[in-house]
Image (cartoon, rainbow, N blue to C red; front, side, top):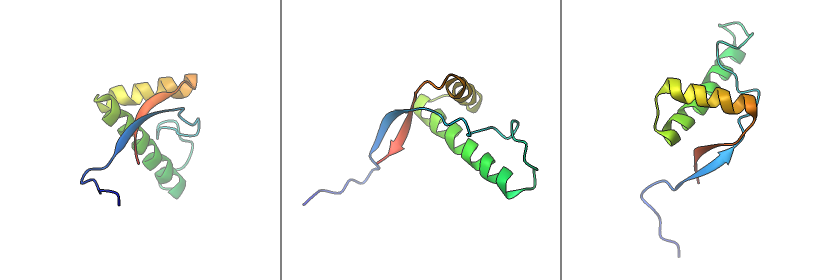
Length: 81
């Protein structure tokens, strides 16, 4: 029988940022549309994952995300298992 952990097991994994993860500033959707809100939430989740992994500010995480998305090079982020 496995022992349950009280804490989430987190592991860093190198992932390539999908090109369709776009910032609200890059979006061509209407600000009031559901598609815009989905893009905004997806962007937020990716930036927050980079921020948590690299222990940096929102602006630094955003810059890292943009650089790695453009170059399509992997970046380490926390993935809950």
